[in-house]
Amino acid sequence: MVKVNAWRLGTEHIVDITGLTHDGMGVGRIESRVLFVPETIPGDRVLARLSHIKERLAYGELVRMLEPSPNRREPSCPHAPLCGGCQLQHMDYQAQLHWKRQQVADALARLGGLEVEVLPTLGMDEPYHYRNKAQLPLGKKGGELVMGFFQQGSHDIVDLSTCEIQHPLITKLALAVKRVVGDLGIEPYDEGRHAGVLRHAVIRVSFLESKLMLTLVTRTRELHRQGELIARLTAEVPELVSVVHSINPQVTNVILGRETKVLWGEACLYDAIGHLRYAISPMSFFQVNPLQTKVLYDLVRERLKLSGRETVLDLYCGAGTIGLYLADRAGRVIGVESVAAAVEDARRNAELNGITNADFFAGRAEEELPRLVRRFGTIDAAVVDPPRKGCDPAVLEALSGAAVPAIVYVSCNPSTLARDLSRLAELGYQAGPAQPVDMFPWTRHVETIVLITKKND
Image 1 (tube, rainbow, N blue to C red):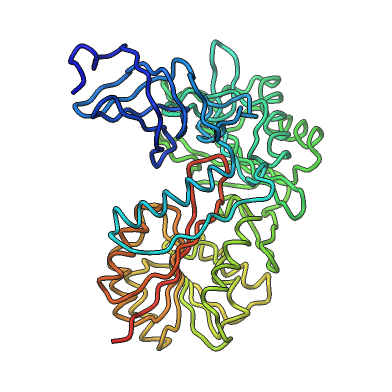
Image 2 (cartoon, one colour; image 1 turned 180 degrees about the horizontal axis):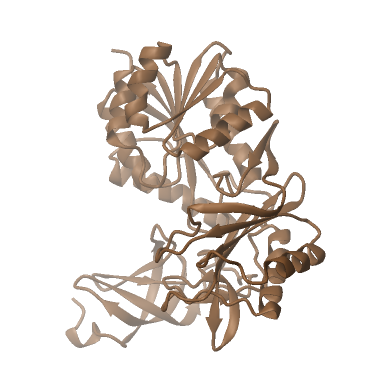
């Protein structure tokens, strides 16, 4: 056991880091007690100071690196490690891919009690500047305007000067917004007092067309010096083709308000995933890494091995991106999404691409599925792409009740994937190999797809 006087706040200990938590924090031990140390990776030997203590575990601050891991790298971003956008800038990219595979394998085995093969993570050849969307809060620090990303574990804004993972045009526009907003004296939002005007700048870029959309989120109904702001920004950033105003007067962490209108320019951007084009409106959900999204969607097509006659169900379909990507290989695609605006986006994207064999319905997946089975008959395959909380248990019951023979599960959370695969196993399904895909290099996140098939009775 650790001596009582050694296990107290402020004491310093030499620790060997042997693992990583799911959120990318280094894990070591002091005798029998677990210590979590940010900014460390397996293989590091560090001097850590205890900063927060519980009965059997503690959190520490990195005081000094004694022996670095062979997988440690010097972060190339000047904002690491303060910025909350990346958690693994200090870790070699190949080591990240290995850890993400292990994260999936551990979740499936330990949380799901499953024996499922986990394949090596599919990474990017160039794992930089892949994001097509940034949501940047504005505020003041020391009386100066700041705009960037929240520091990890806080709402302190790290002022942006560059970003390793955003498309370069996003950074170009972000710096222009900050400069012009400061010149025009537009007051940034003060979260503590719920005062000020400009809360966020939400920037989207089309990789296909190199065009930008800017959504300015304000607490107030009026945007001070709106005309001058638009004139300056469009002159300085010719790639900017759309300026949108979103009004959000609520005390909330939700970024966009309920009222959104186009102030200037185009109503949508257009981007592509593989052979399809998609219209992206200010409120649309669209995958933030279009390059890796094609890798992911090609895997879904490969796993399902469609012949062109099947009826395919796309649950949690969002703007219909997966279902539409499968439409040329299916007889019919049926998408279900609870957000009505996303369903409208899906229908518009089907029309944009001349796809006539896809139908999209607004509603809760567990409620709509029985109705759709009654209406369309046998469902030959399904794709589920739920949020981080995973599938509603009723969805899994409904899929089993409809005797869907093949399901591709697209997961952004290994823990809920493990839980849902375990439940599907109880319902008579067999999971095939799990394929992790690195959609978000330098972060803790990992996407996984698994083909699940109904066992023969």
